[in-house]
Image 1 (cartoon, rainbow, N blue to C red):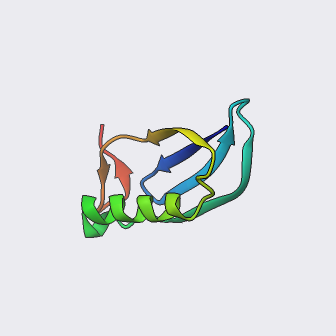
Image 2: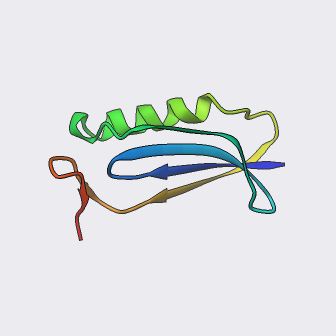
Image 3: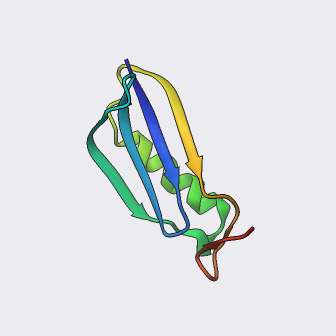
Length: 78
């Protein structure tokens, strides 16, 4: 059983499979965050990364996000 992990950051999106023991399984996929193109572009890109992972034995998905990101500055808005 594996978990899909997605990290939504201000500068990059990253996705990987993680074992139930917490080990990151290769490959870790990443791409720049297309925040300047709006939330739909970020979501579409994130889903695209997840689709490129082996999902045959996935039981859960975990998502981490820094918070609200200012696309013009590439920073988290606090």
